[in-house]
Image (cartoon, rainbow over all chains, first blue to last red; front, top):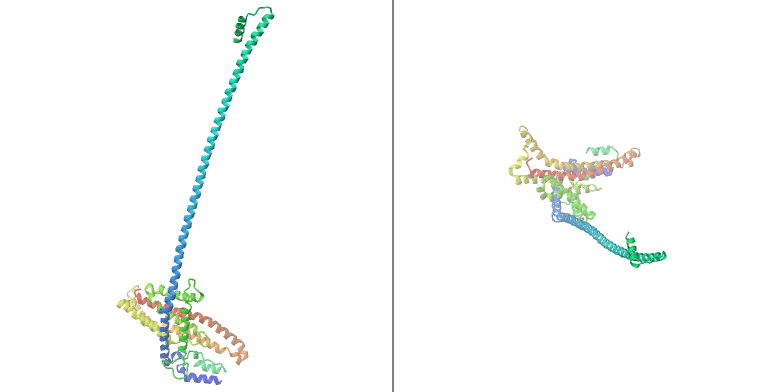
Length: 179
Length: 260
């Protein structure tokens, strides 16, 4: 209770003449004075130190981000170029391989043809040789047949009691052998 | 005064919701002269220190990746800068430091006022009226300096039908001169009402010491109410500072571009 009465007394004696301290005009000059000082101080702190500093930091950051983005774009295009070059090299290598393949095939074909031709030539040479041998054999056989036939004819004629004249026998044998 | 008599009737409950707004000298008990160091001086000084801590010490690093305190400063800067740019346009950016000053002072003073035992400088008409009048005078003078007498076209709404224009002009003139009043009372009234309501509930809170029966219900309820209103006041503190700043921007836009 005691505190309450002192409070009430203070209120009556103090600022509460009008009920609301906000409407106590005797304090206005004091508030306005300190407010103006406060606002001026804040304004100078902000405009001289704080705002340029923060604005600078924000601008720096924006600049860095822009630069980084540009750099990233650059690197990206470099990577794309590298990929293109790689693709191109791959394509070239593939074409080269294709070329080598064709060349090799042609070379092998050529060798093959050559070998075949050589073999053919050998075969035909052998064949000719064999034919010649055969002909020789045949000729010699024919000659043998003539000799044998002459001898046989002479023997047969002799056996039959005739007298074999060499010339006639030979003529007869040749005559016979023609037929 | 009604509350005080009510308080005496309630057997020991002390209602002084408005005492917290009293301007008292810090040293001695003499009358409050214009230069007297009062609680106003103290809390305005504290707000200067807080602003210095947030915007100067906090942003000291200038790191590329901001630290926490640096991002608070940058957030405040970006928020107000963008608001000024959006509302007043590119040519209003020149006035950004003034609006930032007002906004930072109001928002910091509002939040400091929420500390227990603190004095809320922005709950006083004297303070808000000076700021509102400063804005009003600056904007009006700027309007005439920038636009000459064509600044008066801000009252002549050319998009309205011709018959209505004189009536609208009258309304516009009245509303123009009411601006500083509403601008200042909105802020002071919001701050004062919230703090007074908290104080009223705070007076109900110790009821349990007087009467256990009613107190069991009233005390928890009033503590809950204080908490709820305090949360609301945190929101109001920011919103009112924002409203004050954005209205300043709107008035500034009218001064720079008076043609609707």
